[in-house]
Length: 375
Image (cartoon, helix red, strand yellow):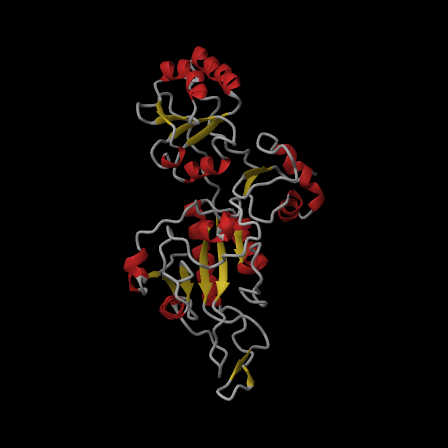
């Protein structure tokens, strides 16, 4: 389906103030919302990006509105807030004010926000001018066919752009820490995911990625090192042999080099940082893990054998999938999502012992390999 998207970003209130802002992390998922706005006499959806952003900015005092995209009652898609900017759509009170949950901003920082105009619930009411509770007709209590067609088409386009797995398409109420019924009791996010999976199965099989080139040109490969002399000394033979660029600034490497070799354990260069490099377009991001002595043994062997990389790009086998850990996830929760059986958590743990040492300790942002369901 060919999407028509109306770009209204520059028309939003306060646009000049925030137009150059950047979200603080990679886009990992999509959150679906409803506006909870309906015509009192008919129940039909009302509102668009202009009315929602005017309310957020001029009445609630936000710098910008709460959604990246708005889908009106007629199915029109409005691009309201640049994808590079974190929308204010799913912040939550983090009781520990923790870095892992990004101080309650995890979902805002990593999830795009799509809002469907409408109030998708039965038994809606409002208060009239005298303060009396009045019913809203039970019409338009679910998204229209035009809205759903636009929603699914937009999500598929964004999934392809940011490599978002189906399980990271969630309703607002499914985001840990958010106490809400959004996107409405009559809109089931599981049905959205089922439709996306069906669309995936109907699409042609992707062609395999080409092999790494036999030769890497100067300036295409970087060796990322923790900020310590011990690792630099451990890498000297490798650097002398292959002449990669060398950098200690991991967070500035996104989009600069197609081939990345990161040295050290996740405590020094995190899995989340490597995920950002992959999302930034790197063809190969490879970790040489271990203490300086272990790293030196591996790098020296590569230098001696003339191999710049340990392996080709580390994509899972065709039947495997990947899953990015979200706040509130446990291996049992993930196993229930992936396999329909929580007790299969051990399958996921065993497949990820290169990054997991304790099955009870997951970090938001970790990318897990998901094997096929055991027979």
